[in-house]
Length: 188
Image (cartoon, rainbow, N blue to C red; front, side, top):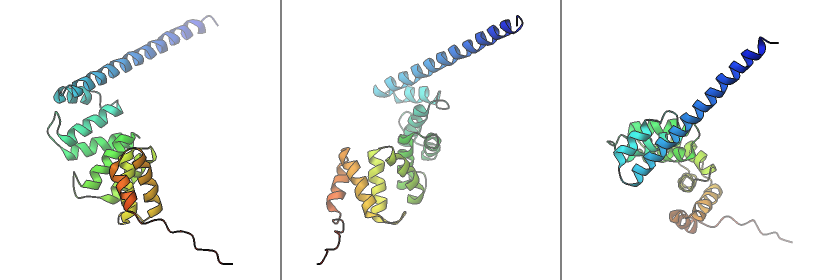
């Protein structure tokens, strides 16, 4: 029993040290992210890109921001292929904003030919998370029925959600769609 106590205390000290190192690391990462945000908001895109790219392997939001900056060419030369790869990493990790960005890139063909079929699952994930632009774009795919099976009811539902979030184009599409089929009249 006396031999176990020192081992247990040593283990507790070691584990306690790991927790505080993790907290320190997390705090440092948050500080780097916040500094990048401050740089970005002040228009110092190059500095923001450098900060976020220094933590993009451990922070999903930084990963997505690096992807967006590569997509738009802010602070770094525009590189759609690298942007798509970075956004795909963040999207696969479950970040719905990255899923929406990736779906839009694939839909528009920003890093190759447009690929609405590849875009649809990413847009669906982001739309399910409540991303209004993804809802609108997925609604268009359902309305058109070219990349995924046509489903006007799904399109209406998605347009309604996007319009409620302020997407004017969704409200416009909703107004232009034919009215849903009414049930047949019952005759007596």
